[in-house]
Length: 122
Image 1: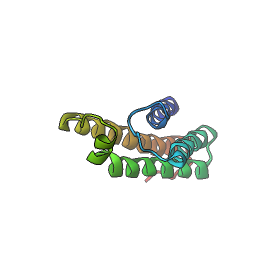
Image 2 (image 1 turned 180 degrees about the vertical axis):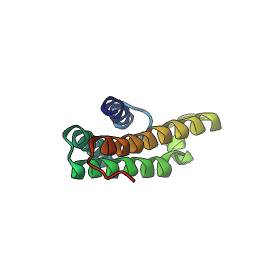
Image 3 (image 1 turned 90 degrees about the vertical axis):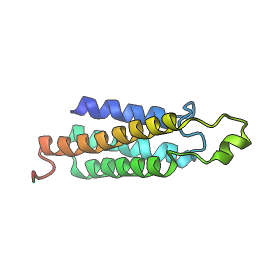
């Protein structure tokens, strides 16, 4: 479970890296804060610290919220930079992949907390 969480965190870091074209207008603080919160959550899972796991969950929800708000970019961005507007299939596939990554991060954090005994089982 810890390996899956690490892999998903690395995927999010790749999405938010300055070299990635997934979020071209992303502010610098968002590029730093969300991956940092997810890494803190990973550390909380590895070290069995409930508060760090909670920060990881906050990072996962922030990632999902940001994906929800920015999945479909504004057409003006493409017109200003002379880029071709992507088709609907690309936008839908991108949204589904990013939502799947975000939800799987939250599920992994929850299961990791239950397995390690940090979070009470329901």
